[in-house]
Amino acid sequence: MKTARIHSYGGPEVLTYEGAPEPVAGPGEVVVELRGASVNRLDLRLRAGQTRFQLSFPWTLGLDGAGVVVEVGPGATGVEVGAEVVVAAGISCGRCYACLTGHDNLCSAFGLVGIVRPGTYAERVAVPAANVAPKPAALSFHEAAAFPLVFTTAWQMLSTVARLREGETVLVQAAGSGVGSSAIQVARLLGGRVLATAGSDEKLAKARELGAEATVNYSWEDFVEAARRFSDGRGVDVVIENVGGEVLARSLEALRPGGRLVTCGTTAGATAPIDYRAFYTRQLSMTGVYVGRKADLLEALAQAALGHLRPVVHRAFPLREAAEAHRLLESRTQFGKLVLVP
Image 1 (cartoon, rainbow, N blue to C red):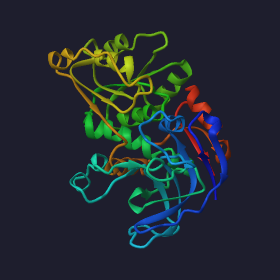
Image 2: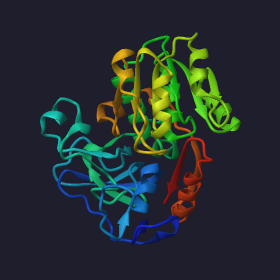
Image 3: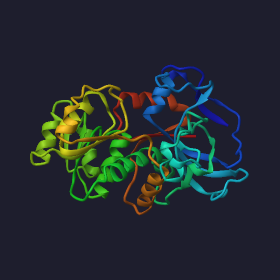
C-alpha cells in the first residue's frame, strides 16, 4: 500500500510518498481502508521532532481519519466489514478505573494513533475496534476524516469541562484552527454567545458564517477590551483557547470573576506569564483537555448525524502531496481543516 511517511525528523520535505507493508488486523483490531486522513498541528511537531515522543523510523503520521472497514480481527466485536467509520485518535487500555468510568483519556496507558502505532497517512490503517465509530451519513468522507480529533476536543472543552450554559458568553481564540472552527459550532449548539478571534478579516467573516456573534482581529485589536465590550463590561464566562503563551495569560484577563478557561494547545508557546493571584482573588478556573474522551466523540457524532455540526474542510490534498499540506498548515493561512486523500 502507499503511505506518506518520514525516515527522519525535519521539515515538510522529509515526508515521502512510498510503499509500505499492508496492515493486518490483530486480536481486537480492524483494518480501515481510508478515504481521508486529517492533518493536525501535532503532526507538524512530530515530524519536526519537537515533542517528547520518540518515533521509530520509517514512521507513518496521522492521528485520525475516515474510511471503510475491510478486515475484522479475532475477538473484535461491534463492527463489520463494509462499515463506514471514523477513526478516533485516542487509544486506551479499556480495563482500568479511568477507562471504565468513562475517562479513557486519563488512562495511564493512553496514547495516540500516529504516535504509539502507525497512523492514517496511508491507504489503510489497523486500529483497535474501539477506535472506530459509525460515520454519520450527513458527512462526506472528507468531512468525516476532519471530524474526530477536533470535535472530540471541542465537545469536551465546552460541554463536559466548561459545562457551558444557555446564554453564556464564550471567547474562542484562533477561530481559523480546527479546534477553533469546531468550538464556535459547539458553543452555538449549546446556546452560547460567541466572540471569535483571528488574524485576518477573511477568517473573521468565515467565523461569523459559523455562528460567531462578534469577532476581533487580534493583529490590531485588543481582544481583552473586545471581550469586555461583548459582555457588557463583565468579562466573558468562558474562554476556549489552544494557543498558549501570552495569549493564554491575556485570556485570563478577559474572564469575568468566577469565569472558566479551558485550554488544549500551546502553538504560540508552552509557558505563560501568569499572576496566580487572579485565580483566588477573582476565583477563576483553568482546565486542560487532551484529545477528549470517546464519549465526547460519540456525543458530537450524534449531533453531526442530526446536521448540527459539520467540519470546515479548507482543502483536500492527494496523499502524495502531504508535504504541501504541511506547508499550508504551517503558514496558518487556512481556515478549518486540511485532509489527505489516498
